[in-house]
Image 1: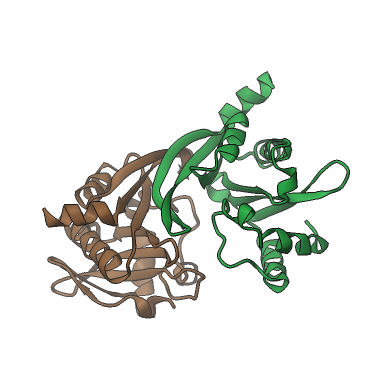
Image 2: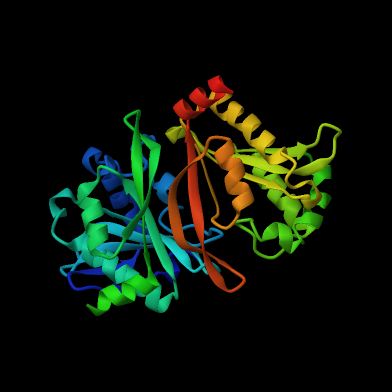
Length: 186
Length: 167
């Protein structure tokens, strides 16, 4: 269990490799960047530390594994991370989490390519039926990217989290294998 | 909840009529499994767990709040596990008590829950307690070889305040 299960994956613009212990300081730097953190679900947590993020990145044994990859450009520059969390083999579902931690690499399609690569892996190799996510309702860039990858809105979770102490709605989105097959054939 | 409640839970959780509606159920737990679960919950600062009893002291089920303090929210999970006691209002009464605790004592902003879309008895109970539908998770659970939907419901502090004043 844990990160060893995350096999290396090749996309069009990025390659994904399993998170290793030595990636944690970089992941922590990204998480603690206020511009990145603004969109993360833990903006109101204390600053991350290597210890506090270890479980999140698939480096501990959990009941349901978290598969987490570093997103690297073709030139092998790490720019962010993507994960399939709480991979549930019975209900054949998982939760997607993604963040491009290098801000100057935002809006270049790395996230979209990483998500498409992970979805193909989840549906084709892992046999998943459903991948879902939740994101801030005002995260227009994120939502556009998720829609491009086939996610549809399933609901709005009102005042689900706090950002700088203020309640914030979150959108629940999911893509089913049935829809994704249709989508990827087009 | 006390350790002496556990054997009854084990007995009830072997009953398909009961587990059919529970989200997290795999194989029916043994008493040893149930002890481990109880110990984990007792040590977990983000879980508040009660046994539900009738006024004459009969054990009926469990109700839990799983807290996310930094977001001022909790997820509620409830089961009347003794099916002889279904449809007598024990669930509704328990949910209301726990909501009062969540909003008045813990000062939460939001209590949410998920339930099987086909669990009409539960959905009615939650609506009666003020919960609002927020979304439908499609093909979210595999039950008896078929994928079913999960309903997401939530109640906000301000909604609860209004409804408890009208009480």
